[in-house]
Length: 212
Image 1 (cartoon, rainbow, N blue to C red):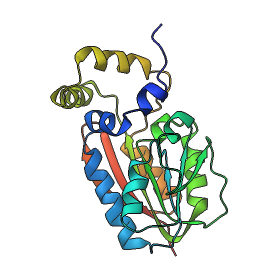
Image 2 (image 1 turned 120 degrees about the vertical axis):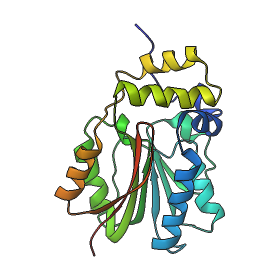
Image 3 (image 1 turned 90 degrees about the horizontal axis):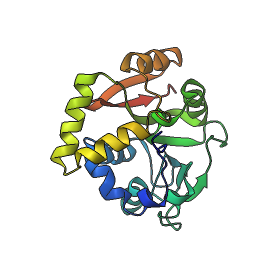
């Protein structure tokens, strides 16, 4: 049996560089997240990064002048690598903020690790202010052709085949993939306006807005 994937200290110590090598359009999606925050939020508005990891997005937002930042992650090892003076950090697997609290919710490359994704999406929407927006990026397919293209991307970034194979085996029990159509159906049932803002091999990013 392969080891089950964990965001432990070995991953956390150099996660920024790791993410660039393993996630297509990583920096582009972060930049788009910042652009969306600049469009829809003032510097004092509450913004949360769900799956904030080591704080790469939070650091980008703080550098841009945002000062009411929150980060949540299930890995304390990841949060320990995030500067504690730029955001209020929480280690948890559920959202416990009041209704309509956040103007922007960022959730990039996180929901495919959430088993009860539908309920988690509902909780996100509850915490989002009317007129507020979410950025949601996720892996959306296990199609062999798309995965092969995705692995070609990794190899081009210098990731070895042995590392690719080991991770592919280790994430089987912890990754819960849903399709683009599943996401669009959830957004429609929650009466959310939604737009595709980025896509690459096996990954999709949405901007989602809550009606006023």
